[in-house]
View 1 (tube, rainbow, N blue to C red):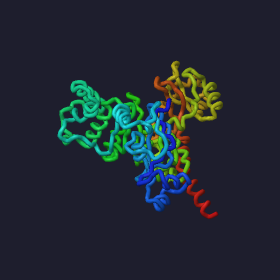
View 2 (view 1 turned 90 degrees about the vertical axis):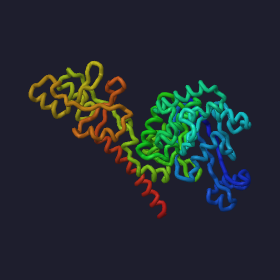
View 3 (view 1 turned 135 degrees about the horizontal axis):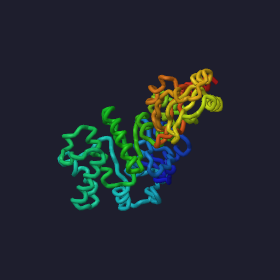
View 4 (view 1 turned 60 degrees about the vertical axis):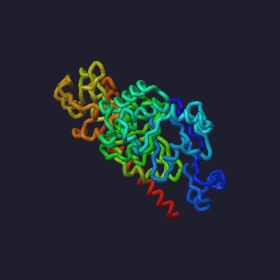
Length: 408
């Protein structure tokens, strides 16, 4: 996918003279704490370089003071970068004059904040239509657009309600609808779900991903919650003290942490809710329904496994036959394996491993199918357990290496 937002060597320093001694010290490699002690200036973002692809949900994750919210505010220049460039499509946002910057903010971006910022004395329809009113759209058109946006976030029928009549989750949906109503290319979401209860928060995450599957906006999503970052992000950026520690897919972050700081985060994550079947999928040993025991045993031996998936003429799985049952059948002179088929469930490549655990009670491999239900792979129970064990050992290995370094 083409790059939608290019963040190039961006630095943000807060203080009276950000481009003076503080910037020189930062470029010389001094830490955020040292710069604050010497100059009284605070480093918000330290040389950030990110390419955000069109249509992805790019998540920036970090704790308080990490620079994540500062970074998102630099994208639309609510904060003026001290150095570096931000390019959206072919537009250098950092070079826009005030008038063009206002147009860029109004037409190209929509922002959703942690606090809903709704007008309490206006109904929901009017709240959602506010950005369109600012753009000068006529009343009938903006109200129609507001209703479409409300329907998109599941609030059709609440157009005449007032904010006080809605729950927190519903109010946040209004905030999202307001951002979507202007049909921006880019959504900037700063801790948008952080004020919500856990259950409502998860529902909003689901809703965001469902909306994204339909609209394919470019979304820059800020959060301090790693579980949320790994759940909604196409890619995730981990920040600390204004600096980027790692950028990668959720699987990269979880399975291949590049620094001790990232490893400390991932050790407490439920891997089964982040890793998908695709991470442990392997080639399936498959045989036709009319195969003989000899055919099945040959396939099993070739695949170095103890079971084979039986498929119909269209490649859809019918179940599994095991080496043990086939060997018994051959010894008894049975020539048909249909009666040996054991029914097993099927999953898709994007199924979370947490949902697969309960399918392993029989100890048989689980079929992985495509959108048409055709067999494309297999998941072995022991492979899942081994993978999760490998992930859990990463942080232990890094801790051991850290301890050894401290002793030398």
